[in-house]
Image (cartoon, rainbow, N blue to C red; front, side, top):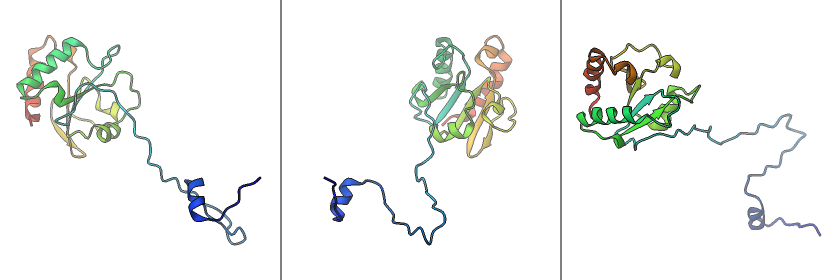
Length: 168
């Protein structure tokens, strides 16, 4: 036995989408609008991002950052009166095609530090090394990787002189 009803309350319980009656004699084409928002990528990261500081590393084989570099980073942040939880540490190693806009939208970052990452990889314009630049309202610092700084006092000093300018 077919169900037949025209009662608006019954119809609203049966259908959760809008239904339109289209007079085909007057209409030659139908445009369907998809009001869904584009899917925003999700990123797994270390820290709580309390101070909207995004730290990007490229460490294949690591989930976030290796322990030695995390310890170094903790010392750096402590010198800036911050903690690891104040930042978001994200490993780009397995994220081919990730761009700056996706990261900016997801992390709502005010500052980004790129440790050994070419800005072009994130579709950013050329950024001079160890010099803070502002791009789309975000302060960016492209610097050496932790490995490059490990045995060089000059590189550590160049990095630190700019990094301390990012203090909150």
